[in-house]
Image 1 (cartoon, rainbow, N blue to C red):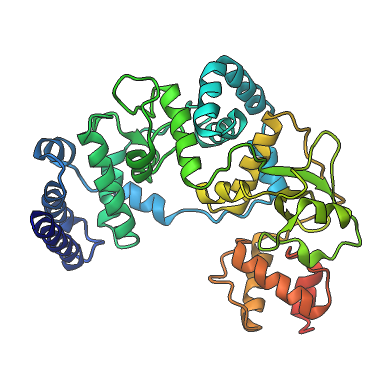
Image 2 (cartoon, rainbow, N blue to C red; image 1 turned 90 degrees about the vertical axis):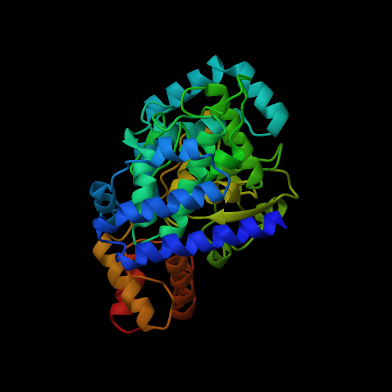
Length: 401
């Protein structure tokens, strides 16, 4: 009975907090103090100690710079080769390999406990914060509270703000220690506060889950989250491959899977220095820059990368980085693949929408919706259906073909 009553109290306070923000227009900073007081009451009703709530939130001010950064996010328009060339830099490879050796005992323990190999964890560690060198210095609670009050994504950030308070309340971090990028991620692998609360691990045994300073906690927590997202022990995640020019290109899609043995029968082969997964393991052929660019077989563990970050280019780069740390050679460049520029992609998206394809907003990003529409249009027009928008497709659409 007490649990039911408590749930209703929380629901009413949620509505109250939401109403306070709505009344102020949620874009008027003058309404922020009243909204924050309502949220403090909600947090206490949810079980966070009054002392934690007071020490963390009392006197917190609205952060217009955070809202400005949220509004100014730039469209991710780099090609896979551009992004991977920049992110899988020589210094990151060298430092990553050194860190694997320096923390060999920790990684051996993690692989035994979680089944996640060191290169996978180190790949994320390097891309997220340069192995802990760039954590960000903005006050996390101020960022989260501002974004929770703001109109754009209040529910998402209210959950994050509540989780951050719960992390403080259980003694893992203090409010002062919570600093990071403007959107409120935390620690050396940039966990959301909800992920910190739910998946952070005390791996050094000091009684705290410290993802800011404790390397064992950082690495094991990353592994724990990956396992939660579906990581399968002992399975590969990505292999660079060569592909015959006569392949039926419509099979090259993350939504299409065949056993590795079937891909081999189609003429798909590992590039020199790489190794295919087991013959019966399902895999998808992905062509991040179309049939003229690099090619990869992605196994079920690659889906875990997409769960970590939904950006296809980021996820593929992180997976490729991990293969390099595991000993794979640099990727091949293909035979001259080029990506349309931002304005051309926007134009293409508008033309696809006129043809009845759902590409979402014409934003210049080649996401899953755009790739699916491109593939359908290529099939309709009798073009190679590799899901990659090129000049030939744009020209056909411009001409009404």
